[in-house]
Image (cartoon, rainbow, N blue to C red; front, side):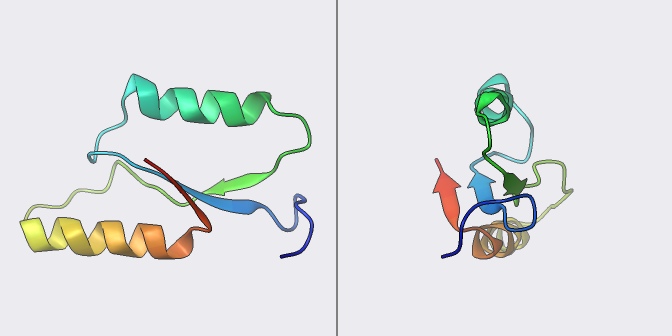
Length: 71
């Protein structure tokens, strides 16, 4: 893995239940407060999904993009 930079950010997935919560937002507040730490958020809690299998598949897609998962 190369060095972390704006051109090479860490890809982060933060667990969610398809709705942003205070805890979810707090993780990003913490990451933003770190100096010289660049990340790309791979999680998307706002995606509308209906069926149970669709939810699982959407989570798999989001997690697959990430290098780090925070649960």
